Length: 95
Image 1: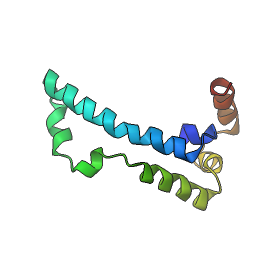
Image 2: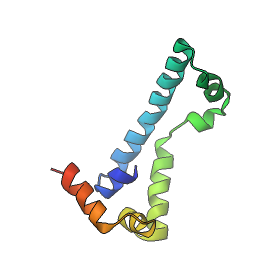
Image 3: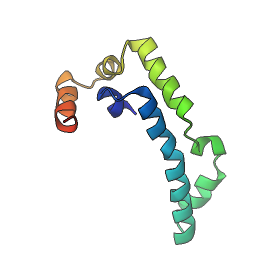
Image 4: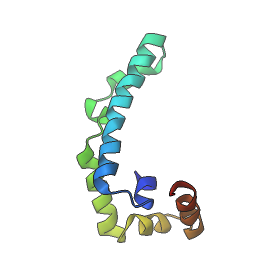
């Protein structure tokens, strides 16, 4: 979510991508079940909300970052990501 925000991907697109995580988690749990992985019991015992990834959460997080820091980039800078790292990320991933 943060990388996409730094790349200035629209919030709606970020939220839709985040929501896909819920399907991926379900597939991971099923894979663990089929292959007999010990982690499956821990994952299945978690409350369903911990395996959920509603797009509304992503939108709320992005809004909170902007409310508290002004932008996703400002948040990243505030937590120690360097401007050079952000510029490098953009140079490598945005064509």
